[in-house]
Length: 309
Image (cartoon, rainbow, N blue to C red; front, side, top):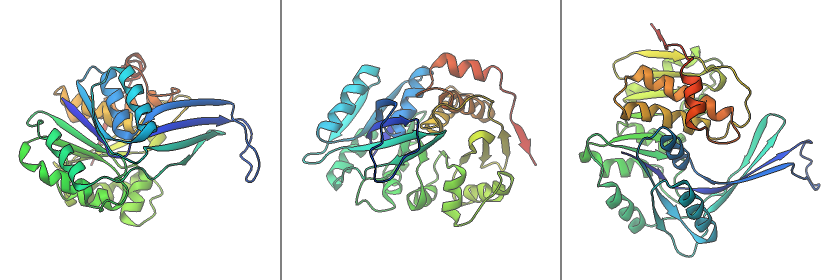
């Protein structure tokens, strides 16, 4: 079983414009899409497509939270939401314009110590052989070690934890020895306060993340695929397949979902990397999260990863 935790879910309002945005003027959309958003939610959607049992956990509030609950109910993915009173789940606006996406994300709800304790109690049911995904930004007002504190609470359970967040919350979580983290290149630059021009230049930083405590590091490189670093001091690279990018939003989440689906099925890390690349690329080539056939079509043509010395 793979549980996904989205501390800060959102109603994702994605719009497309055919003309450049003009500040201070009325801009009109050519297409609109409203979805239940959040990195953990997206991971579970891919896991469902790959027929891996998954449950979504998170905090919801107000009418926007109810919208997410209703939309997730339609997917038939099991959910266990914790309701936060007197607040409102955020709305994230994503504007697709000329091949790029501009995002305006809300700050989300604030959660109490009791809310977190309730979540921890729910996650205590997982143990050896299970995975928990901690994904996305931390709740408003939370300390940077928010994820690390939860990982510490679950440290004796035997569950494997995947972390997909940024900045100081990621740095604190790495020290708690997650099974895998999944930064992208800009997030890696931010974490180390440096500029990295090529994926080859990223190699020493990926290795450093292993030294800092991560068991595995899957570094997303966009069109260049991904690098996988392991605690056994091995590094693999796999390029992404070619295709027309329709919507890159959620592709990193899909990559993590594909990777964990393969791991949960007992497949080697190299095959997990292939499945992750296939899921992430298939999602980027789709209007929204990819389905099983789209993932399989790419996976069957992907080569084996190249091990780097």
